[in-house]
Length: 361
Image 1 (tube, rainbow, N blue to C red):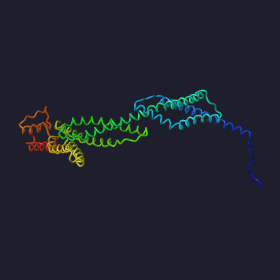
Image 2: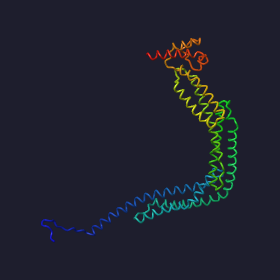
Image 3: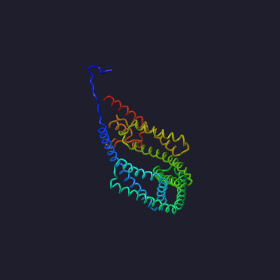
Image 4: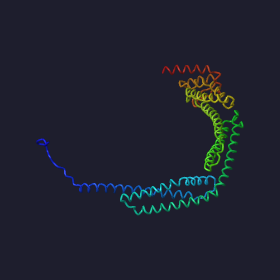
């Protein structure tokens, strides 16, 4: 059938030679770009591998003799033995990058050729270092294992000593001075930390040398018992320090609500301790102290009344047969020494007057 009347007609002519030339130019540009990128990547890879290989070789050239230093050296040696295949694979990957560079029409830069020679030298140095390290390992491994056995025995003995001290009764003496006990517990804590660190380190060494692992279960037991002692004595110390601070603070600086909240917090913690340690005399000492202090809460509520002014304090001191001095503000401790509890009704009465006057302002 013919074309419709008025329809445009034409012919597309494509030159195969021109198309081939255009495609060839584009392909060459892509190949050049890939070659440039590969040069950069290969340079970074070979530089990194030379540094890494020489670093491994340097670590293997040491000749340590102490248990800790030799164990670190031996770990590197074992790692090197098991990682030889991975090392060779990484180095071969670097060489393959340069082979690929040639396939893309690129050339190995002169400085990279030097690095490739350095990599071969590093391989030789590393292999020689491993061979020399094998001799040192053969000479020192048995000595290190013997030293490890002695160190484990010393650590076990030290741990037993710590547990014996924790169970010796010194930290269950309710009559002991708090600061002195906490100081002793601090010393035990320092010794425990040292033993616990060594136990963990030596257990790692035993795994490294493929030895039977020692039973360091007493490390956890010692930690539990030490934590119990420190917690109960620290709680007692916190209460005594805080209570002493309240007693010596000026009455107008105290907040009864804050005091009550702190006492409730300490009582709750003490109650939890009593549930698991009913016969612990130190925990019971704190309970007794807390119960005694709770009887003073009404005093705090009255003397910390912000409505109390100088005239009210003068009236209170008058009941105590004392003269009020504004330059010597009252504290709960002073008031107790003055015998205020024997005249507590008078204190409450002045507090009620002060509160009424304050509310009318």
